[in-house]
Image: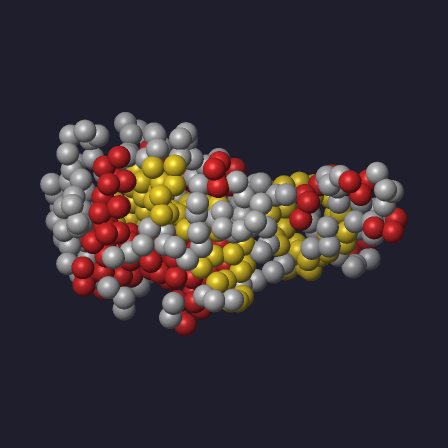
Length: 373
């Protein structure tokens, strides 16, 4: 991955956007795509949509959705001693929180906080066997109680106080790769399509909101745009480290390429075209079985209006919903190439009705058009 693209990825990851408070990330997306897209808009849910018009009015419109919200916490109570009680924004695991540094986002600025818990010396032996629930944890701001009550309000959001770092062989670690890396992918696909002379149909990149509490931004964005075909991008669980049951969760490996989902949440023609695009580009890919609805934006998009043919692409992610989520950067680059090729292969003849044809064999677009810049 080129340094300029890593820089943008780092910027996205370190821009706070807890569920329901995505405005800073939204501003970053608008700035990035303002000079590329023909139209950039923000809806009342906070989702940002960027449109790159196609060259053929008869070709299908493609929407790519990736959520920009991250998990976090919310202030629910401020004690007389100046300590904060909190609730979860999204799926936060209380077991990882003790001792963590966090950022409390207040009207007057960001405050550094520490998630406090009694030290092991003061915990009774029986207590050590169980996870301290979120209700039993507090956040220490290191400030006098009067100052805490002046600066902090109930409802203020909180994010993990860590950032992006490269490590190992092509790996990276950060909070909120779920799913800021998807927003990065969506921006990069639009940039590559613009550089390739545009796709036949319109391309709509949507950075959605509130996915972590029910794919809410995707619901409204899909209804508003009503595209002919859609892709959702998210992360999926890597199973390439100890303790994961591959017979239950499949064999998903960091560095082995993007993951293409298959199952009832996925339109079969979209799935086939994604596989064909990967083969045409020589991109290694992995398959993931999704036997029910997925916990992604694809869930909402597929059943919007009269139904939108939807696909789901992911990258393997280790340690999901922790401050130390891990991806392989090469998987992100490969995903950009895959989605770009998929978009360039969409022509007016494409049909997404299951069992009625419409799949392609090997790809239709010039392979060089989607090449690396």
